[in-house]
Image 1 (cartoon, rainbow, N blue to C red):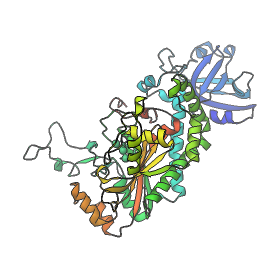
Image 2 (image 1 turned 30 degrees about the vertical axis):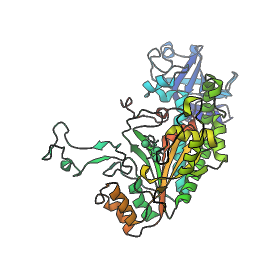
Image 3 (image 1 turned 135 degrees about the horizontal axis):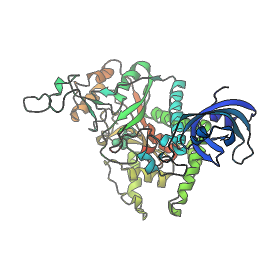
Length: 477
Ligand code: ATP
Ligand code: MG
Ligand code: MG
Ligand code: MG
């Protein structure tokens, strides 16, 4: 008989047909009922076995965690909780499992504990829902850009450029660092390296992406991105995935419009296509909220929160307006937001961003026109001589989810800015060539994929929305 995924069986109302299912045993109850899961859904298939029909040696091996193949008939279920069940005709143990040693329990286990057994946590309902959603969102990203005619350009992982200039790069080297070649003054001589210069893991595909936009018009890249973050926050990973579209003939407004449309599109896609997993995570949040004091409980459930973002326009204000709001805001007694006094010219801390979004506007906010001094060299300079055409999108519970800008397309202005910042103009000749040969106004943004997954799943820690988190404490596999 045909092998069928459990999701398909449970979605259909038909009964009295034969199937084969394969999966892992979640629980085995009353020596009779196996809850079988195959990863296609959080809902288990009830597999009914009759001890008298089975070889006792085989029966003993039916344990939590074991993998099995079962053939039998799908029949209406008399029990509560499921419409159909599988009446076993033939059962095969594919892989035994010592249930005593198996760390995954049917009872709820803490996220902290599951992070310590990250190699097995995929087998829980929570992580099943999260990673099916992550998959759906990634698919929606490609679907959105494909429908808009963007070219998916693969930018390099190993690169010599530091787009952000923030010094958070992982160096890539083939040198024997125990015994490296030295220059006359004793420094490591990276000229001897494979590439003849020091290379690093990419912190952003943007600069290379701009080369693509100057030929294809609209491109995007979506790949792993690396930053040697020395902070240990719930919003930063050392390895994360970034979506970076880059569009020729776009100004800052076009850029904001696209980013807002894009975020709404992928959230809509998740709601329309992964409702079961979203409902599961929404219910999980409701349980979590019950443990919090009344004042800290969120006003909206997960689904409501997603619908709210879809149904409201993002607020658009300048950095300067934001500083005025922050200056005039009263420090909150609830000490979360007590450091609100800000001076023009300083970068916003995430508590400022979250104040604007969660307390002041209660909507996603796009902040534009930041001081040039706190933004990257490539952003288009405004006529005021102080600010650049940057935009950050700020989300409730997250803070910054997108950073973007219109790019400086004028060769002379760009070179002047690079000189001011001591950025080696010769090394970036390839980047500057786009401004020499047929330059055009263009813009783009970077969206941290895990921050989007955090928002959509309602999870609180970025380590829980990436399959293999790379943080100082997580690099075993
Ligand atoms: P932050 O202020 O949160 O450190 P950033 O301004 O350094 O972010 P950008 O250089 O603007 O980040 O990168 C674009 C986007 O990539 C950010 O808006 C964010 O969504 C995401 N991002 C940046 N750093 C990380 C990280 N270490 N882990 C996960 N996502 C990140
Ligand atoms: Mg950063
Ligand atoms: Mg930032
Ligand atoms: Mg940023």
